Structure formats: structure tokens, C-alpha cells
Amino acid sequence: HAFDKIRNFSIIAHIDHGKSTLADRLIQFTGGLSDREMSEQVLDSMDIEKERGITIKAQTVSLQYPADDGETYTLNLMDTPGHVDFAYEVSRSLAACEGSLLIVDASQGVEAQTLANVYQALDRDHEIVPVLNKIDLPAAEPDRVREQIEDVIGIDASDAIEASAKSGIGIKDILEAIVKRLPPPQGDFEAPLKAMLVDSYYDVYLGVVVIVRIMDGVLKKGDKIRMIGTKATYDVDRLGTFTPKMIDRQTLEPGEIGFLIASIKEVADTRVGDTITHERKPCDAPLEGFRPAQPVVFCGLFPVDANDFDELRAAMGKLRLNDASFSYEMESSAALGFGFRCGFLGLLHLEIIQERLSREFNLELIATAPSVVYEMGMNNGDEITLHNPADMPDVVKIKEIREPWIKASIMTPDDYLGPILKLCQERRGIQTDLSYVGSRAMVQYDLPLNEVVFDFYDRLKSITQGYASFDYQLADYRAGDLVKMSVLVNDEPVDALSMLVHRSQAEVRGRSMCEKLKDLIPRHMFKIPIQAALGGRVIARETISAMRKDVTAKCYGGDATRKRKLLDKQKAGKKKMRQFGKVEIPQEAFIAALKMD
Ligand code: GDP
Ligand code: MG
Image (cartoon, rainbow, N blue to C red; front, side, top):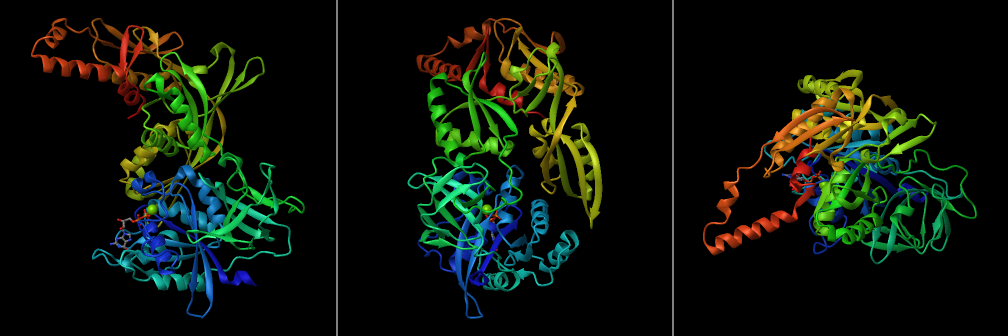
């Protein structure tokens, strides 16, 4: 049938191994875009994606390739996000394909991130075509890397393709391998429509564009469709494929990947992994593996300048249009004024949103400590979900506090195993497995998510020089000895700095917080005590000594311009200060104090 001429594949690669360059080269080779239309790296479209060299949203392109056998094939390429925060999105993209290209930099070899994604692809029974990229480099060692792929990943690499995405070597071999070695999709034309919602994005002119993979049945323009997960129904206004330009079609058939537009208002109305079917003749069961996006990390975002509140609200609304996994609701803090409590998929997601708010909308923000979602069983039988440590109810009313735990897998060259075990132990980890693949260790830990959201990933990267890969799944909620730690500056509690911690960590956290604040808060005319406390009990304390009077006197000497400059500087500095009782705390103090080390 028609789908004999279709191949759906994703590209798996460690960061910087050449995934985007190769994708561009494949588009160029098959003539999807003219040279003039090829701007650098077509697929990474967001600025932040380009700068960080990571793909945040999955993208898809349909290529027409006239193969050596005389037939023209449709090759659907799915680019996938490369970060653990988006593991679910990756799993859906892989589920929409039958095979993967595994790109390995021939001068570097197999690295951390390659592994987690390859294993996911193998779990989905993907056929895998290994590509040894960057063979143009003098340092390339294709034979060594071929062997390494076999040892570490355990797949046959004898017919791995030597390529250079940069100089265009091996591109035709890759296209031929996709046609010959990857299986065509399968599906039933006659069955009721069953399609997977792979991704969606918001376009200012078109509204929400949904990327779909048709499993069974035929989707036609004008059809009335239903999303099984959200139960919403829509009329399909437009259908088509990306070349990467949008090309309209009348139908999409089994095995095809394309887009649909159906007057959907917000991306939030679409759920990645949802099943799309016909309203009149629905399929009997939804696709497996669907999971609604659940924010797992929360933090407060407050405008530095209170006048920016409305602007911040508008900016968040705009970001939310295109990102259903980001959530926000208004909150007020005694310390920080009006702002929003925001939910994210993980720390990178948090950073991206924060960066976009400041970059695209020019907003200066203060972020409070990231926190996970806690469950609380109350003495009166109520259950409470806590998104914000500042809202913690009175401890005497709480029976137990439960926190989310994750199952983490870490893969690493065995040289780094010692420091990794130490890190996991420090973070209350429970080791559940340790095994070896060649000289690589794979270790499994149960860890409290709370201990991971701060800086676990950064620490892991730094102690292993980036060679460890880290992947996790939320496991369950477990009761723990958790306490709310408050921070008091000059005897005033600073709500933005309060956090839930495990009792065993409270003293260390409290001490480090007080020490940091001592360095970060400028001296005042009076002595300022800084304290960390559990309930009424002080567990750590520092004091900022008073400023000597003659220090200020100096400011008023000197010539007029110098004086004006000084005053301007003070004014600019003022803007970034927050007043707590009699004490002014600079904005940087919050950001720095909330970073752990
Ligand atoms: P990605 O992070 O996997 O998408 O990697 P990119 O495609 O962004 O490539 C990372 C860097 O490697 C860029 O500077 C590319 O120009 C470079 N690069 C990609 N492919 C090749 C290649 O075949 N040879 C050489 N020498 N450099 C390459
Ligand atoms: Mg890239």
C-alpha cells in the first residue's frame, strides 16, 4: 500500500554532535528549501534553542526523496527535545516513528545523553541506523567509535555510516539507509481514525497548529474530530505536511505525519500524546502511554518593579498560549508584593520561561526558591496539596507530609562513580541497582524530587565533566520528616526565603542561607541579626555589624559631577532593593541566597 513509500524517523544525538546540522543537510539535499530559504539551522527556531544548542519543542519535516530503486519516498523527520525535563515529549515523538538515526560525533564518541534516548528508542522497537558524524575532522576515529557503540549500546555498528553533516559527506548514504533499513509504517485504512497528537504550537496567524501521526483510518479536511483525552470536538479547517513550508492536503493517511488546524484557541486545549479520532465513528481504545503534563516544580515570579505587574501578567498569558505545561496563578507575598506562583516541568523549563520573560518582554524578575508539590494529611482527615511553602498550615494540625520521589537512572564512565554515589547519598538517595556495560556504570536511585530540583543536574554535570547522563521518572509520594524553615532578617520573617526541608538537612541549609545573606545584605546604620528557624526554634544565626557613620560622610564630598553620578548610581541601586521592615535587601541577594552550593 501507499505507506510502503513512507519512512518515519527521529534523530538521536548528544548535544553538539551535529543533529541540527544534519537535519538541515537532509532538507537541503532533498530540495525542501532553496538555498536562499535555508537560514542557518532551520529546525531550532527559538532564539533560546539556538543559543543553548538544545531543541525545546519537537519539530517535523516531510522530505521527498527519489531513491536509487527508482521510487520516490516520503521521509518524515521528527526532531526531538534533548533534555530530561521533556522526556515525555521525546517518548511521544519516538512513538510516532519506526526508526532512529543515531548520530555520534566520531571525534568524541558515545556520550551521556545519547544513551537515555537510544534506550527509549530500543524500547519502542526502533530500527536504529548509526551515523558517525564529523569524519572531516582530523581527530575523528570512526573505527574506535564504531566499536564503542557496539560495546556501550550493544547494537550492531558494522554498517554505521561515516558522514560529515558540515561538508556534506555521506548524506546520500544516510537517505538510502533510511529507505532500505528502516521499516515502513503500518496501519489500517478501513479502521476508524486513530491519530496521535505529537505536538502543537501557537501561530499568530493560524492559531493552534497540531502535529499528528495517523495510525489508522483517513483524516479528511472538513472532518469533525474528537480528542479523547480532553473530550473536545473540532472541525478540521486545514490539513497538510511540512516541507518545512506548510503544504496543504485534502487527506492524511495511515503512517503519515502532518499538521491539522481546527480553530483551537490555545495550546492548552491540546495534550501531547492524546488520541484524535472521528466524532461520528470513534476508535474503540485510545493510544497507550498518554499522560497529561503535570507541573512538578513551582516557584514564585515577582516583578522587581511593582509597576510591571500587569505587563508580567500579559507576558505570561502569551507564553502560556504556546506552552500548555507552564501554569501560573496570582499570589502575593509580604516581602515581594504581587506576583505569580508558576508551575514547570522541571528546572530547565523554569529557566527557559524566566529567560524568555526577561528577554522577549524585558521584565526584571525575582524568582523564589523552586519547590516541589507536597501532599499533607491533616489531623481532621483533610488532604491538602501544597504548592507554596509560605502557605504551609499550622504544624500542630498536620498529621503527615508526603513528598514526591523519583526513580533516577544515571549512566557514567566508572571513573566518576564514587563522586556520584556520594552526591546521591547526600541527597537522601536510596540505591536500588548498579550494573556495568563495558566501562560504563549504570546506577539506579530512588531520590526525593525536592533534593533534585535545586541543582542536582548541575552538580552531576560538574563532578562528571558532563559525561554522566541523568534521567528520571516520578515514582510516588512518601511520607518524610519535613519541616518548614523560616528565615528572619532583623526579626522579620522573609516569606520568599522560607522553604520545606528534610529535618536532617535543616541545619546545614539554614547555616548556609544565613552565611550567604550575611555577605549579600549591605551594612546598615544598625546591627542586623539573620536567623533560620524551625517554628520558634532558631537553628542558625549570623549578625551583620552596623556601618561606621563616617563612611556615608565621604559620599558628600567631591565635585558636582561625581556627586551626581553617585546619586544616580544610588537611585539605580534603589530600584533593585526590597524593603523588609527597616532593612533593604538587594535583589541579587534573593537570587544568590536561593542558589545552593
Ligand atoms: P546538535 O546540538 O546535535 O544539534 O549539533 P549542531 O548541529 O548544532 O552542531 C554542533 C556543532 O558542530 C556546530 O558548530 C556545527 O557546525 C558542528 N558540526 C556539525 N556537523 C559537523 C561535521 O560533520 N563536521 C564538523 N567539523 N563540524 C560539524
Ligand atoms: Mg541542535
